[in-house]
Image 1 (cartoon, one colour):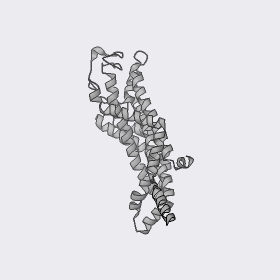
Image 2 (cartoon, helix red, strand yellow):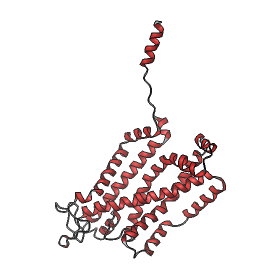
Image 3 (cartoon, helix red, strand yellow):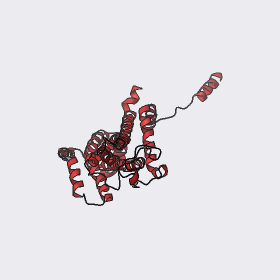
Image 4 (tube, helix red, strand yellow):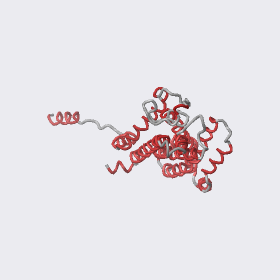
Length: 305
């Protein structure tokens, strides 16, 4: 009887072990990566500053003061003024909205196209997969950046807002090829899993299996690659702005501001340095966050702990 009581008390002292998940483990590993956390914090700060631009500066983004043209950094103009006397800090804050929007929206376009195409190719397999991926190989051989430049030249006289939408679509269409290859490779391994076989046995159709079972299990690699695609898109937008084919006045982006500033770099260097710094800090932060997410979502990292 005494032994039974001791066993009962011992069983009561045993605490149940709480379960965990891939996302909880990934979040815990991400928080331990100081560079990724710092990059994420900087991105949040930059995004908040761009969103709250009207509350952070007393000037409008296109407010002109000709008498203060090329004014150096001062209390009135913390980052100086451009040749038209527009506050550079205000222009950078509002330009951040455009640059971040271009990066995020174009990346979202590439995700929609690339994930759908790659998941379909990987799941169908066989001849359909071969034809679809050979089409991707052909597109890889085309100078897509020149096609985007050609599109922007053709619609050069279009309204500024319409050109911005074309920029979103054009840059997104350039980036989806690599996304489709990554998605297709992951799908080839996922479609042999037991839950996919169970879904087939239950009579689920191809579209339902891809949308409900395949794509949700691709979120890890897709999120990682998306964080690395945003800086690539922002750099491409800056390149187009340097050519005069990016964001058009009265709107501005960090790339167009740096392009305007390079014309007077010798005499008024702040007009290029500060927009360039804003772009560089954002790109570094995105890359650090992307590297941190890649390490956090890598299943091998769990085994190495």
